[in-house]
Length: 303
Image (cartoon, one colour):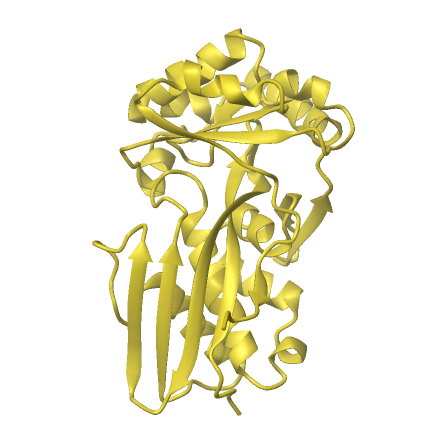
């Protein structure tokens, strides 16, 4: 049985990797997409899009939110005859800020909310498993779903698990977003099949250090966000991004490529955050954000 009333969800942007934590660490950011869905008697899926991607994304069942929603309905026992979607997008597409993860979590949450008893039939762990299948890896979808900082991994059994961390209150994320996008597939294609043992050991130490740095010792973030596993290999895809990361780090500011790029993420404090725009210059749109601690959620409709 489906609910007749429209349902709205709000989902945060996310930044993955955070330097050395490749495909494992994620951070939810205070930048949001809102999606409203309603079951319809008219067959098919209709999508209205405002904001990011409005001129380029499909307006039917091929839209990623719609795809995820239909997979969610399948997991919950069956699809309605039709669905109407309205998307208000603020998360940039193809910039390494988790727009695909946000779309997937949006669709699954909407499907669950529109099915009577959906919360019991598709609890968060099962929803995360399905989201990981759709996304391909769990870091962004876990951060989007749960908020805060997360460590996500796949057990030997194949099940996805997640540990949620509470970032130190003093951490202020700043994102520097360029005008050009880089597809995740292209960025991944630049990664080698093997890396030197010394680089793997280097990253293992920094990844371990990243947990206390994010939670209780933000003074360690500069060292903890250093990386040799993926960022150096991706430099050809976005040299200006790599240059900005290097410039910020040389100034003592913890910075890394956000996800697959080309956005730069700086994890700084309230005193330093306003200065990041001066390093980035006019080629980047710089925004001082907050850490989102609530994660994806169903919110009341206005009016």
